[in-house]
Length: 427
Image (cartoon, rainbow, N blue to C red; front, side, top):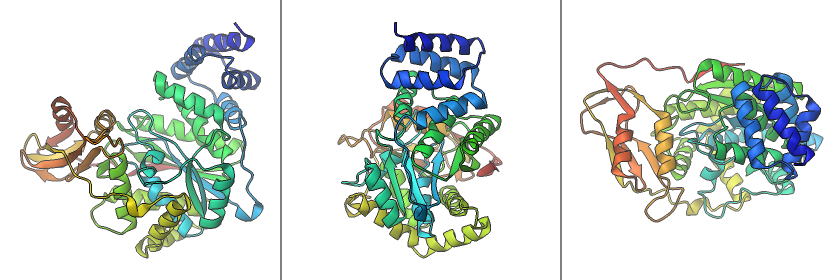
């Protein structure tokens, strides 16, 4: 056993008994895992201990810094600054980035977004964006910098140069079920933003059954941890705690969510009002992240940009800059089945977690296109339905038992249920 392996074993035991790690110990742990001196089994034991016992602000800050410095950190020219970025902690029907990033850029912000793929039952921004034929998400650092300079925004997958240790841990957490940990999520998010050179970040911490943070206290803890760590490391951080008890959009599934995001940018009337409003709030927060623009002024400018089509034009420019052919994205999506109301009444709640799990299990359409499976709701919470009425269209080829299970995820009662606000807290 190597010295790094012994350290990993010791740290897992220390953490499991409630002890704390020093910054040098955390740096060596991350270095050893990145170098292949610590195997997945030992690292998983440490991750599980962190999930069980947590980490202090000091430990989380040290972990964040170690992962950020495990690779290159982008240095932006002074004339480009401030550079802003946004992140959602994950949800169902969450296509906010596809709308908010180009909207903020259309208003003058420089948005350098490093995005990820699906994690657990939640969707990934990169997976949605890659539904566009020929689009490249694997930009080099130089291409990323150049595009933000020319277009004002880019959405790209973090290359191996940027926070490579986080990429390794992210994949391991997804494989081993060690995702739901506030310190691990905070360190992962903030380390990527640091590596991308962001001066300010807007963090959407989702809360509810469709999120990793199920309760409001959990979400606040995560938001406060990310805010503390980011500010400790010299970044401006704005946090929104948002509701994810129900799917944010009408659509769940990569291609379907991209189509709905485009419909929002096109000022079409059918998309989810919650998706539209949250995208506007996030775009306004990105615009105000320079500290010089008042939040209300930012909202007005973002709404004008949306109404005038500036956000759609900027999205098209961003896609073209990344080699994408938006004109070849097939928006004619054919359903393969339906979800019908189990009884007559008012829809009180649609289980976001069940929807996410359903789509994850059935993402392959009959022709094998993994991006085009999913759900699109015709009805929302508060709508009256008759027994047998179509609530949602299904895209893909699920088993009959899975469709029956999803039908139960649409809860129907006699009276309207009071809905939670979209934004539960912000700081």
